[in-house]
Length: 125
Image (cartoon, rainbow, N blue to C red):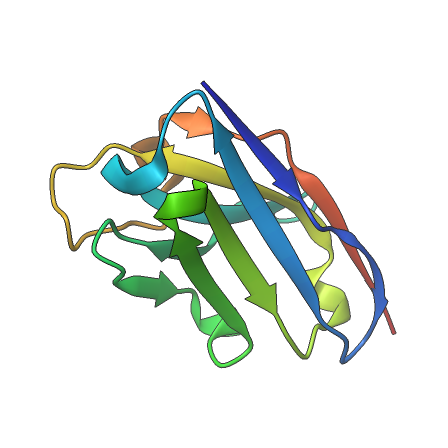
């Protein structure tokens, strides 16, 4: 059971990146999926999540800029990040939550069971 996050990189302010979270050894359809980010200054922060039935929730600072999605047939989740800002610079992690509620997801890291290794996103001003 493994999650692999990828797609990070260096981008200028206003640019875009798409992060991917690929599952191996299991399928994602039984899980809510969350994206989190971490910096030394702020610690770990919930960014966006998507429930098993496709309901989404994002933290206020990324609403209108980031979009989370999932493709269960490919066992992959995505985080499309547009209009990136320097304050979005962080290591981004994906995680899965085996919640019983099909329409629920949470931006609370203790809800999540399995975590990917992280991918670095750096936004230059």
